[in-house]
Image (cartoon, rainbow, N blue to C red; front, side, top):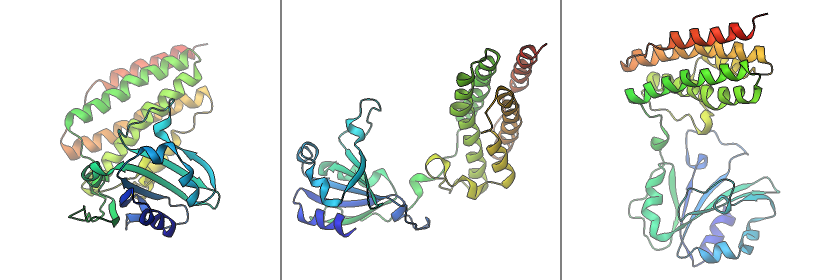
Length: 278
């Protein structure tokens, strides 16, 4: 932190310093793996981006990413530019540059924001970090129905992939679509139980803290995809799991559960039967 602040204080281009992430979240247990999520709000960007020797000030780089330079993974931050830096001493700084003209947008972007330095007293109302913008969002009934439809629609892709011995195709749809819908439903169930005042973190990393042991063990079973037979077992296990979750959420939020699931499951089971016929 001393390096981060000294650099900002000495560089006239940097007018405001903010920090986000777990280090400003009082509900996160501190550990040695936490990054420093730092934002420098600057009067101009080009000199930082074109001549990057200034990065050496913070230490010896092990590996770095600059997402806004990426062609394979298109950037999405607009005028903002980030340097994600892992240092050889174990520290990591995710340092974002933001034009000073976009100060208001930055302050409003994330409720887990604190201002560490404000050279010109530009921030009139200093934000108090809260998890509010990270809380689960209660679904609308249409969002709920869309989730149900996506799950059952893609289940037919999985079944056909398994029938064709297309292992990667089938498992890809299980992992990237069906399990994501399972996770979405578990999160909504947690939201119903906690009034949606819960932050499950990126990639649902805190989910285990809030869900039941039974739901957690059921979720873990969806990762057993090493063979075709296992994939079929996981698929049918997901049907049971998803139906139970949907019933719970629909009951709590007073949503109507779609009635096509039984027909879709019957179709998938027939495909399984035909594929395994002697």
